[in-house]
Image (tube, rainbow, N blue to C red; front, side):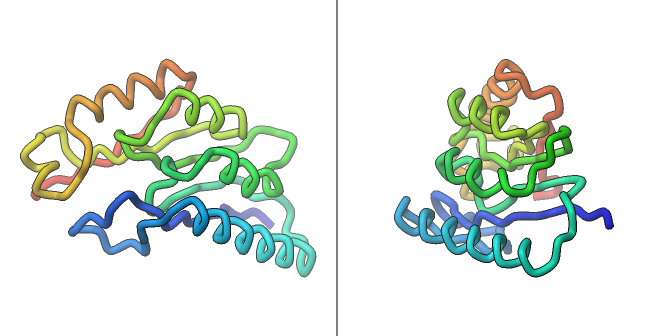
Amino acid sequence: MSFGLYIHFPFCKKKCPYCNFSSITADEGLIKRYIEALIIESDHRLTQQYLGYPQTIYIGGGTPSIVPAHYIKKTVKRFLPDNPIEFTVEANPESITTSWLDDMLESGASRISIGFQSLDDRILHNLGRVHTAKQAISSFDLARSAGFSNISIDLMFGV
């Protein structure tokens, strides 16, 4: 049976006014408890019914790039087969760092999706985003330099 796996990390620095996704602001203690619960649940599911490995993994949110990389690695390692698969992780421009990107690549991520939303600083401000257009472009360059060859960007139109 082939399937894809979506894992939701609901944590954000702040809630954007346009966003309808399930997200909360959190400290590392809450993130740690969430990851522990997620691992318990996934281990339970894996022992109840063996489905094999997913063909794709998508880590979304919230803002997965504010979650310390070791928590993401700990969560996904149980789902990764020995052969490479498409493994996407979402990120926001202001929270991408070289070390986080390196850790994501090391954990098997093959694709990154960066939430630009706009390249107009006025629109970004109106959307409640905390990054600038310059930071968005820099985050793309940083992901490319780190070794990501598959990069998508989210853009909003008509706002």
